[in-house]
Image (tube, rainbow, N blue to C red; front, side, top):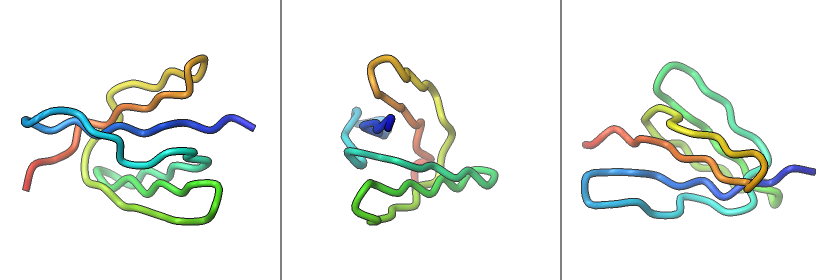
Length: 64
């Protein structure tokens, strides 16, 4: 199983949004991320980078 840590980037910097992400669904600028325990978060933005070898996903978040 390939799990990833998902980071969100805003003007003030980068932070972890969720660890052990097992699924990501993208609908336009809405990204729904689920971890292995079933917890879900939803963020607005765009996927900037996916590094499967190091289990890292980076998202450029839309500022409110």
